[in-house]
Image (cartoon, rainbow, N blue to C red):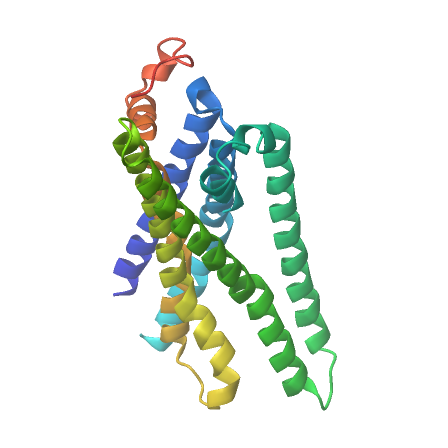
Length: 269
C-alpha cells in the first residue's frame, strides 16, 4: 500500500508540474496570449509550479515515512463591473503591481507564520495559549479573510453580469455577449468552488483542533493536506483547459510543433 501511495503521489507531482509548465510556456510563447488577464494566470501557474516542485516532494517524503511507521480575482471584477474603463485601468503596469502585491503579502504571511513557530519553541507557561493564538491568526489571515473577500467580489460580479445580460439581451449581439459573460462568470465560479473545496477541510481541522482536545490521526491530516495540494494540479485543467486557445497552445507544445518553426504569432482558435 505504501508503494502504491508513493506512485500515486508521484503521478500527482508530475501532472502538477507538467500542467503548469504548459500554462507558463503558452502564455510566454504565444503573443496572442500576451494580455493582462493571462499574466495573472501566469502568476497563478508559477505559484502552482513551485508547489509541485518544492512542496510536493517534501510532503511525499513525510507521507510515505508516516505510512511506513503507522501502517496506515480583482481583474475579473473590473472586466465585468467596469467594462468601459477596464482597458484603461487594467494595463500591464497595474497587473504587474497586483502580482507583486499578492506575492509580497503571501511572503509576509508565510514569514510571519515561520517566526511565530520559532517563538513558540522559546515560550514557557503560555505555550498553549501562544500556539492557539498564532494558529488562529495564521488561518484567519492566510485563508478565511482572502476567501471572504473573493466571495464578496464574486457575488458582485455575478449580480452585475446578470444585470448586464438582461439589459443587452434584446440586441442582436446580446446573445453572444451574454454567453461570454456567463462563460467568464461560470469559469470563475468553478475555480473558486474547487479552491474552497480543496482548502476549507484542512483549515477547519486546524482551527478546531485545539478546541476538541482530541488528537487528529496523522492519516486524516495527511489526507486533508494532499487535498489542498491537489488544487495546484487541478488549476491548469480548470483555468486553462476551459478556453479553446489554451487547448490549441497545449496541443502545439505537446506535439513539438513550436520547436519546428516560429509559431509565436499563430492564431489560436
